Length: 102
Image (cartoon, rainbow, N blue to C red; front, side, top):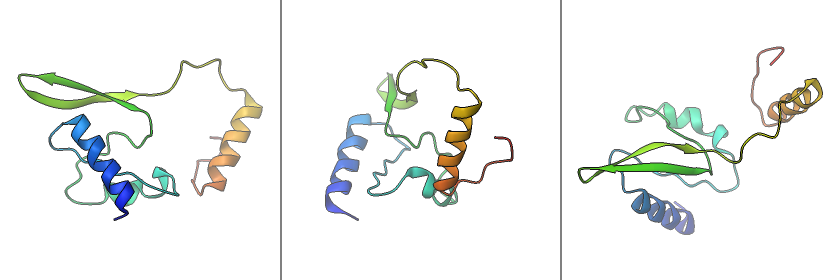
């Protein structure tokens, strides 16, 4: 475990303060590259978010839980065919396998 990344993960987990959750901070890679391996761990029920975005946390009767991901800014429009082709090419460069036409 990298010292600085481990310390950051610990600080984030303590800030979130929700039981039955864990925080993993990655360096020099994208979460998509390790997400399937994490989901394949028997103790992991679900991967709620794999994101650098903010997470909403709720508290009720002294318990805390992760509600959802606060994901960026509102969209400025819809992608057209040219933008879709650029997005698909970028994802394929990252090694993602997309269905044809998507």
